[in-house]
Length: 86
Image (tube, rainbow, N blue to C red):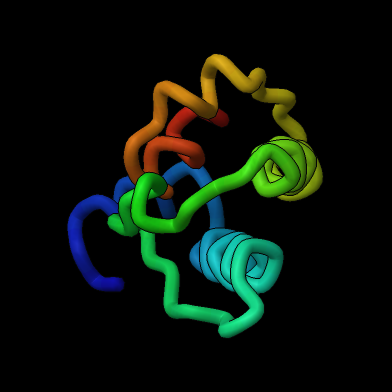
């Protein structure tokens, strides 16, 4: 994850926090633990209503920020979710 995007997120959050979030997000969304990255398209992940609620709770847990369903629905990539917390 040595790209510029990851580096810009690290300025706001420690690298291990971002990695832990990605791992937990992946675990919560898929039984297969597919490899989810910051550039993963949310539309490809097939978020159902339970996954949306879980994602909102996960963002609150990791980043101490409450996001709304409307904010989440405006996101196209995983990095967009994290950018909502800035």
